[in-house]
Image (cartoon, rainbow, N blue to C red):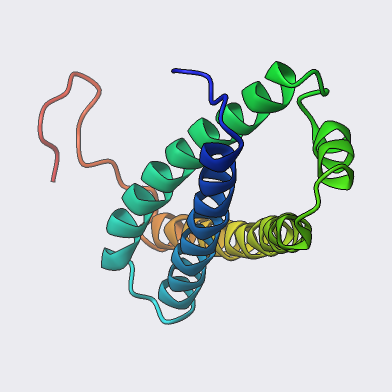
Length: 149
């Protein structure tokens, strides 16, 4: 991955990173809606979208960290804050603020979705156990693998 050395290219990448996080949040909201409304078939496509966007976000974050390192700043939140404090463009701070708020929102939605999935998994496991108990734990195969009815 080539290191960004141009301030203009970095700003463009920074703005693109914000748009990517916005898209990620939208996918998480769609996932949340699909989970709430039981549209399980939608989840495969959404998982694919999430993976693609997560990969893009990782790439963009690496570019941002490399640029900060190239300029002599630490490649973390503190380095970004210091770099922003030396910029004359207040719009950059607004982008960073939006970006950090979007990341927090994405984390919250993702946690909620994880809890919904966990709850649904527990429900399914209990239902499976109840069905097994109701069936008297009848095995469909014998001890030697032969069909057993």
